[in-house]
Image (cartoon, rainbow over all chains, first blue to last red; front, side, top):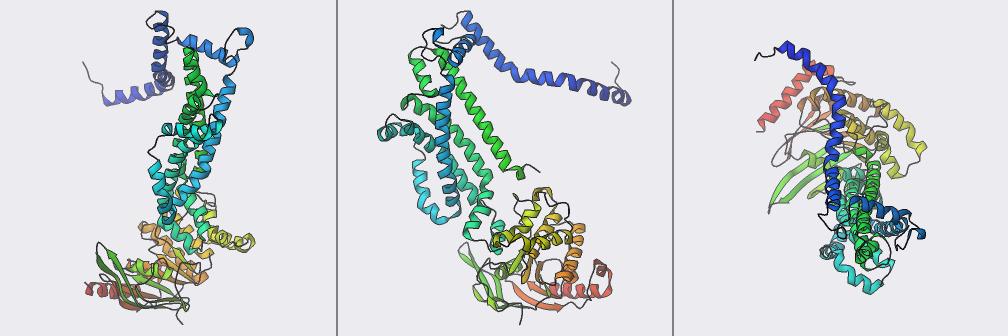
Length: 285
Length: 252
């Protein structure tokens, strides 16, 4: 076999690189991205159709899609179905509870966290309590929550707020603690008051860390709303999830799971967008 | 009356269960409107000295006064230019520059003209909307200098402001500082470990020795003003730096 000379390689390779890259790579990338999900869907569909798994236990993707369609757009004329046409309402119920509980967690968690991180006195006063309660999982709070608030929306909001509160307060405190000493000195030589120092130096310094806390907190908020609705409330995606399981509607169960994933993903994107806006000074490097 | 006066100042730190003397019986006088360089090796406590004048730290013994007032805490009469500029990364160049004015609650009309003038003086026109992260080290330090001048301070305290810059940028910044000093005639305390820099910029060079930090000598720099970096080539300049160099060598 004869070897290519350097000039031949130089003559051939640039052109082939130019010709091949744009056409092949996007298609290949798309295929690589979709291969595994498509294979899972295919095997799942086949396993139902070929009778590998009983339909009552695991409905096929097409059956789930059908059930979801009815759940979303169904009406009474389509037959006896407790969930017909209630999808949007249940998504709205859960989203509203997450917004309320998460909002409460932010309102309390960010200021408290920044104060814990900034002021050693506040840290000594509050931090031990926060750290002592933090290892108690929100699921363990369920009976307590029902005992105090009963079967009500506020019980769910309490659990969501509590769950989201911990990562928000811990990350806010971390961010405020790590504020650059020279920035504090710079503001103090300008004559900044304690309030100005907190709002105009410590808070913006802590923002990257706060945003991390907000993101983790949102994930926990969605976990909390599902748990709370399964037990402590009679509406929302979590309630439907458990209820559909009891009456053997596994198609609705799976459609519900995918719905939770979807709204969780979308709300996470929203937080990312907000963070990108708040931290645009950081992405300019 | 001295603009800045230190009398028998000690600074002792406690570290690892033992006492470390950072500053030992320091006396220092800086006359109003003059440029004083504090020259010394690393670890001689020269930055600690500046922190005492700024009010960031308190002396263990002795008195630090600025225009007769004992320094108790940081304040806008004593503007500091930090080694790493210490700009707020979430604020644009312009917002960083006017930050001290907004902290003081000064009406816009009272600082805007000066801010615009300073932007041009330090050569940052056109960069007002940039973030600090988009600037080079030299440009960040220009913002830090302009920000300090916007405060219209009684004294300007500069903590090795050009120490982290490359040689060429440092020369540019030294020339800028010379022209800024001609224009605003502030009382300046300038910390450095660079003999050339101290001789080029200062009216008086205060030489410190390390461990413990002591004042070793005071040399008046009688080079005429206005100065430029052309001085670096002249005999008188070299004579002065040789004098200081032998002083420092004699101390070790």
